[in-house]
Image 1 (cartoon, rainbow, N blue to C red):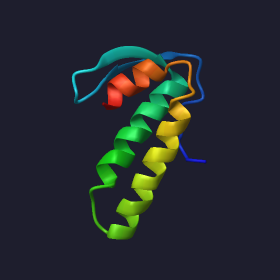
Image 2: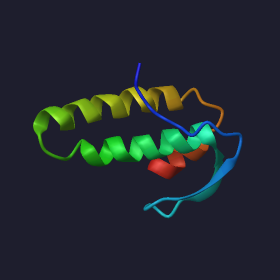
Image 3: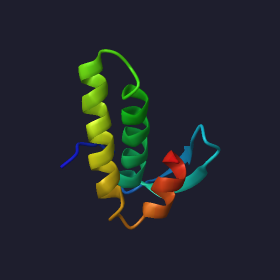
Image 4: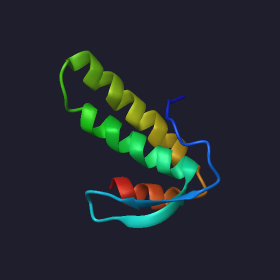
Length: 79
């Protein structure tokens, strides 16, 4: 399974992403979005071992996000 973090909160979070997505999401969804964007960015970085591990985590977390109640928001934010 992949690793992601999210705030321990019942609050909803305003999200504005580089791809022009904006929305209000749950804390868990906020964590999924931010971690997926971070993993994606780091997967193109150096060193190669870190990049490979971040790419692996991206796909593991994305697979988990595909089962999430807010899947549409997550995919829209990271697409």
